[in-house]
Image (cartoon, rainbow, N blue to C red; front, side, top):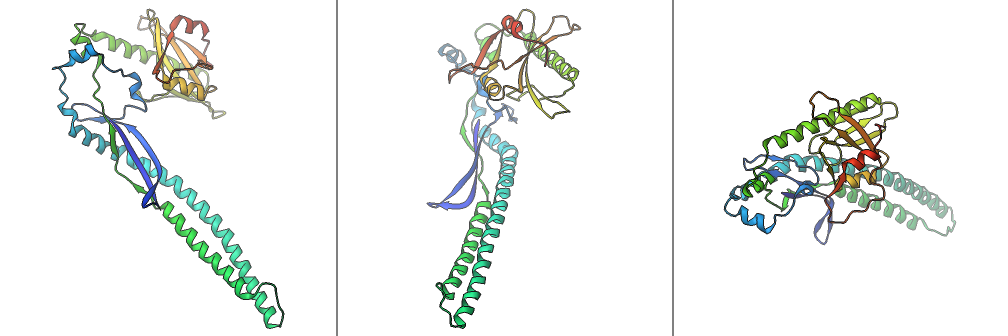
Length: 326
C-alpha cells in the first residue's frame, strides 16, 4: 500500500494550515497481517499481469484478506514507523530554523528599539531646551512603539511556524502483488525450489567477497538491509571519511545477463565518484573463491526512458570493462 503522511504548522492561509513536509511510504502486508517496509520503490520489480495471466488467476486468487483489515494494518504500521520518525525529523529542522530566525529578529529589532528610545529622550531634551528638531519626540516614540509591536507580531508568527501538527497517515493507493511462482504453477510450469536457494547463496557469496575486497583496500564496509534500494554495501575510508556505495551483482558461470534497477542507475549518475557496481563471478564449487571486479561510473551518459524500470546488462561485456576493486 502507498501511504501519505503530512506535517503542517500553525500558519493559516484561507483557513487551512500550511504544509511543512509530506512523505510517501510503501507498506507491504501479507495475508497473515504482517506489515513490513519493502523499500523506496518496490514496484520496480513488479509487472502488470497479462490478459492470459488474469484469466489463469481467476478463481485462484483469494483477495478477501486484502480489504479493510489490510488497510488498517498498514495505517497502524505507518503511524508507528513512519509518522513518528517523520514528525521528529521535521520538528528538529523547523525548531532549529525558528530559533535562528527568532534570535536574528530579536537582535535586529531590539537594537532599533533602543536606538529610537535614545533618540526620543534626546529629542525631548532638545524640545525642553527650546530647540526645534526636525523630528519631534512624539514621532520618535511612535517609531519605537511600532518596532516593539512588530517584534511581538514576528515572535507570534515564528511560534505558529513551530506549532507543528502531525496528521494521521492516509492510504493513497493499494495493489495485490501476486508471486511469480504462483503464475508459473498455474501456467503448468512449477518453479524449481532450488532456484531461489541458489540465487540467495550466490548473492550471499558475492556480498561476502566484496566485503572482503573492501577490507583489503583498507575501508570499513557495512552490509545494508536486503530491502535497501540503492546499494548493498556502504564502505567508509577511515582516513578521509569518504563513503563508497556499492551495488553487488553476483552471477554464476552460466549467467548471461544481470539487471540493475532504474533507481540504482539514477543514484549512480547522481553520485558517480562514490557509487560502484561490483560484478562478482561466483563459481559453482561451494569452496571456490569468487572473483570480484568493479565498474566505476558505469552509467555516465546513459539515458533511460521514463517508463523503464531496469537496465539489462550483458555479463561478458561487463567483465571486459570491469577492473580490480578500487
